[in-house]
Image 1 (spheres, one colour):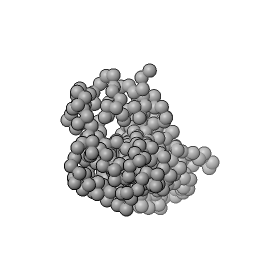
Image 2 (cartoon, one colour):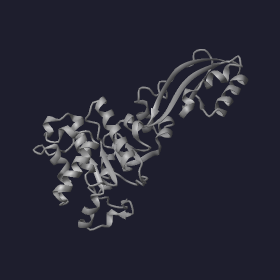
Image 3 (cartoon, rainbow, N blue to C red):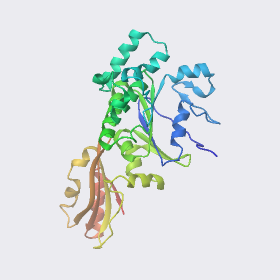
Length: 316
């Protein structure tokens, strides 16, 4: 049985790329193929300009140092302190002790754990354990950071703090982040692009704004509908004979009174039936479901004006 098949995926240097799918879809297998913890039976895996899939084992081990990995359940050494856990990959690489201590101190500061260096994992919260895992993954200054459901074992507030940390790391270090998740909110919060995987195949891929606001595949629509503030689900029924529109605002347009300006010189009336304003990473966006009442000619002119102002408008 094939876990992943026919996948062609390119992640740009410095971006945060998300892979989302249901349990058993093949996302963890795909992620583990990147560092060859799972060896694909065909095809190639290239990180930077190095094709990993053809390397002998010793050279592959060296190249793997360029790829950090964060795990869902932290995978910390229970009998080692925070400092020792972070230092572990550096010790394996036979780095001099003075350099190890300096690097660990840098990482403790980066993940805001300066006061916890001598604690053991059992003395830490889930969020703190994951910060240790992130610091350990960064120890060898990797070019790529793989995140295997890095927030799914955490509560919502802690998840937010870990996602903010990953954003900060991406901005400060320019590190490429490839993450898998089954939570659309994680994708929406930090990713630049996303691929949706189902039954081992990529069924939809693109920038997060486009995929989130205009999902095409049923699996993608299912994930989008799970996000409570999406105005794409639960559309109301027509009750007064008006025309229903879905309006999408992106960027600064989100805060402009464009709908009011479009109808104020006409006899068209409108009712807002659903609406949301939120953010996709750092980009504000809004969606409204509105009912327009009036003559078809005047409503057509209002729709044309809305589109000229830069809104995406679809009749539903």
